Every structure is written in structure tokens, then in C-alpha cells.
Image (cartoon, rainbow, N blue to C red):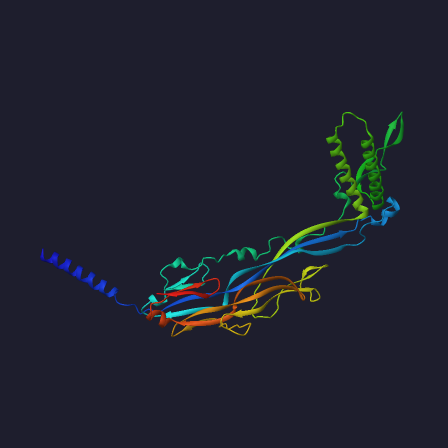
Length: 388
């Protein structure tokens, strides 16, 4: 019994010592990271590409049909149908900071947004910051329609006309000998094979088909057949028109139109400095050619609260580790962000551009000793409120 009580006493003593040891402050260094945001701008461009394709029999159009071809050579024409610009929040790789701490961790109780931006420090209410940051820019920044280079040229070919047969029957001269009335005679035994029609044969049959379609359409319009109602006649006329158009394209050519949407992300790093977005020409569309028209973004008239001069930008580069911890935040700038075509303003957005603002600090020792609570606007990296 005494031995049993002794074992229980040792267990209780061990538990007590362990609990007391866990109450001692830990001296393990930790590093907390956070990021400040920057403003990016998504430029979305709606493009229209029209290809003018000559017909393969354009040379015969005037002679056979009395019509001049609409297109005699392949022509490519690009147009910008619409262009838009939207501001988005992006992580600033030049404003990523770390805080080292040992011992008392309460002074570095950081609150971060879901995107990793600074939202608060020692803030009792973690939901006090503005949860307005969205990852939508990840979806908007990709190309949302197929690349124009992946579209093959749509050639005009006679074999694509469903009712036309490009093959012809050819009879070979083949003779066999047979005995007829006691006399051996040569008997013609034709062998049929198929060959592609020549260009001249295709042209001739295409012309005949056009005139045949027109005659059939006129006959239908002048018909007094009571069995044909208005709806049936309308369907037949549309089929005749469609078929005639397909044959006429062989001589006159045609145009085809494709539509695309492209989007680009640009980030102005310095006030008044042009940031290229893309180059555009009517013959090539969006291109890297230096002769094409440049579309660019520029942030002008940047104003920082408490600063008299414009275009202030003080940004630390890389990750900073402070031995005496400081909290980095921004006095963001407000600027006119413009999308320009050459020297012409297309779009202007008056908005906050954090990276053009002033970078400043708040001593961590003051936060700890005064037991302060700081809340930030995570989308701007600026201070929202200070309290206890």
C-alpha cells in the first residue's frame, strides 16, 4: 500500500513540474511574414478579324458569269471593337516584410487577409478589416478565347459544296474475244474507274449549276402548284439562295469574321511613366512589331496625403528582417490612371495606386508597451485605425 501511494505521489509531482515548465516563456525565435499590395490594371480588348478570301475561279468570273470578283487576293483586316480597363489588387514583390520575435508573442499578433496582405496587428476583432480583396483577377488575366494564330485560313474549295461530285467516270477501252457463229470476234467490255475532274470541268459544271439554280428558283416563284404552301416555298427559296451563294463564292470570293477577347495585366511602377500594354495594327492585330500603334497605361497627377510633391514612391526591395521590429505600411497615392493610344486618352480611372505612395513604419515596441491595436486597409496597405 505504501509503495502504491509513493508511485501516485511521484506521478503528481512529475505532472506539477511539467505544468510549471510549460508556463515559462519560450525562447524560440519565430518569423512572421506579410505583404503590402499594389494596384494592377487589367486591359480587356475585344477584337474582330475579317478575312477576305478570293475564289479559286476568280479568273473566270467575268468571262463565264459577267461578274467581277469581290476579292482578288487574301486580305486581313483587324478592328478593336471595345476596350476596357479594371483596377485589381496584386501582391507587391518589392514590399514583402518579415518580423523576428522571441519570447512575448502578443505584440506581433498579425491579422492577414486571405490573400496574405496586412490587415491588422493585435486586433481583437479579426473581422474588423475590409474583406474586399478578390482573386477574380486570376481569372480575368488569362486569354478567354482562342488565340488568333490557332485559326486556320478557311479556303474556298468546290469539294466543300455538298451537292457537288468532284469525281467523274472514265471508261477504259477493253476488248475481249468471243466466238460468235463460229467466228472469233472482239467484244467491247468497258471497265469503269473514277478520276478527279479538271479545273475546266469544275468551272463549267459550277457555271451550269448556278444557272440551273436560278432557273429552278424562277420556276418555283412562278409555279401555281396548290400543293406548295408559303412555308414550303420559303424553305426551298432559302436552300436555293444558300446553294447559289456557295457556287458564286468560287468565282467572287467571300469574307469570314472571327471574334476574340484578349486581356493583359499592367502595373505602373512610377508616376508619369508609360507602361506598355500591347501593340496593334489593322493588318496584324495584336503584334510585337515596333511599327504598330502602342497602347499603354500611365499614372498621372499622383498625390500622397501630407506630401506636396507628386509621384512620390518609396518602396523597399525584397524581404526585410528587422532586429528591432518595425511595422511597414503605406501612405497610398491617388492618381489618374489613363489608358492611352499613342497620345490619345481612351480611358481614365481616378483611383488609389498604393505603390506610388510613401512607405512608412510604426515601432513594434510602442505597439507592445502601449498595447495598441492597429487595423489596416489590406487592399491599400494603409492604416485604418489605432486603438487599445
